Length: 184
Image (cartoon, rainbow, N blue to C red; front, side, top):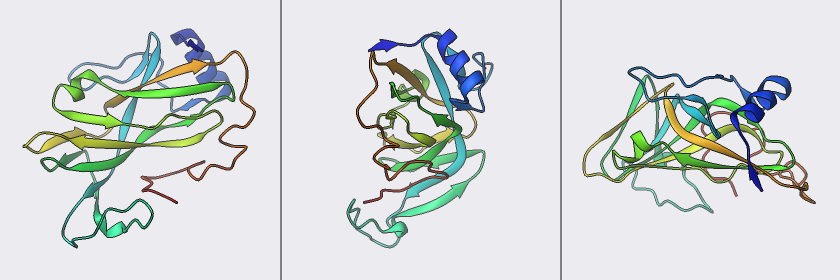
């Protein structure tokens, strides 16, 4: 697998709608940067968040997920409580080509604050807004700013397409919109 450059990302975004909206340069200046980089794309976090709460004393069970585990927050930022967790989504909608797999890594500015960003791989032919898992590992509240950079997407192109893509198997998170909690 080969990592793809800014040139390839730009062509795929503009001609095939791989990333929408697409920002063709790094946007900086008093914000956490986002947009096209040398070998990746720094995606932004939208203004929709689901933050874990223990108000209803629910059990977190991936097979029987209780939506009361979260409180919904919408705004210019989200303060995640100490040692807590939130789900969010990307501003950008992604359409991953059949012979490409994406790995998403948290930005250093975020990581250096004790905030861990996790995203599972974006599989071949997956489409949707990326659900972003954000963990505050600190004993202090942590602020996440909406519409600013949160993670970098790396595009890895295979020399051959897979036998079965995410679209072929009708993956449960295909074409997701909004912040999507666990599905079984």
